[in-house]
Amino acid sequence: MARLGVNASRLWRTLEIIGDIIVIAAATVVLADPQFAVTTLVIVIAAGLVVGGLFRIGVGVSAIVLPPTLRTLNTAGGIIAVVLGITSLLDLQAAVYVDHYSRICTVACRCL
Image (tube, rainbow, N blue to C red; front, side, top):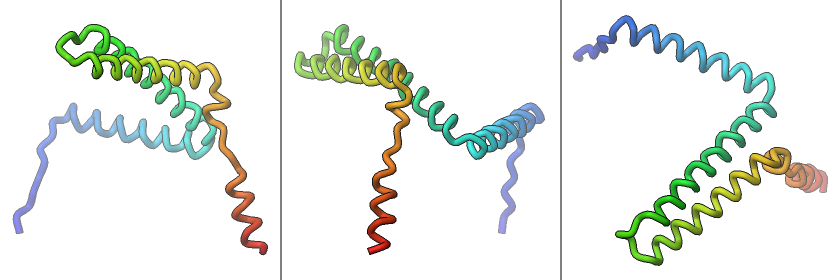
């Protein structure tokens, strides 16, 4: 059986170790405070919606080679994405809300 080896430079190996340390630190933060992790995730997704929506609006407005229907759909989808992203950023508590009803229902069904 042949042995497969990877020859990485010293700089690359150092960057890998630093990245591993950052991942371990991030995992510790997530385990220590899950609410912070969920809030951060909501912020990242909302920012992605805003940026992606702006790009879709730009494509819908400026891509004259596309058919009018596709341009309209791109613009409408971009507007919806921007509105949802801004709404999520402005009201983080509503975006992070978890409904505990399903857990209560599960407990009640087990008791019956």
